[in-house]
Image 1 (cartoon, rainbow, N blue to C red):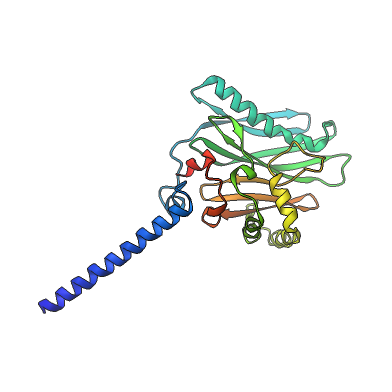
Image 2: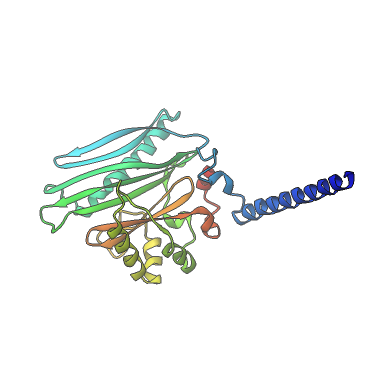
Length: 272
């Protein structure tokens, strides 16, 4: 009986040791792949550690002009008044650049834009804008979607090409990514149309679109890209135009794009 108990104890110890070894190897593996930029386990949706370590206080501002309403955030109580003014100027300027779609003539434009903060933590925040724009001289209303990704201490905007290494392999991952419904009730017909539209893009098309993404400065010229990106606590979001004034948003988990993350960018410290 004593021998059996001893044998069971030895087997248990060996089993625990093997499990511990596997866990350690897994931990090291993921941290090596991510260049120790962020910890995979902290990004797990079921974890209690997904909340950012710190955040910036925000308030809502509204720009109005006739039939145009654009809601946008502003930071408050930043601690450095000059820096706060500078950051808020960038946020407002980027929010109002949606007017570039209307060639500077807004007399006959009806526009209603709202925003959602996708992440506000550490030294970085990501804001998503969406709404509907209509011009009397245009045929149909446009569903608009754009974003701003901002590093607070430097006060500068980051684009998709700053965050991610864009190449054919990244595009392949994007084409397998998850469609993200933007409404309270998922539209299955729009979801299917979005998937079909994305597959029609060539590899070269998407590489060009992604490299030009996150800019409303090129509206009307050859570098125009109606693609925008944002970050959440565990995913990269990317929007693409699918024609007829519509867009589709897809999300990719960070663990699926470890090899494409630009680890030199300080934004990733937010997720450490």
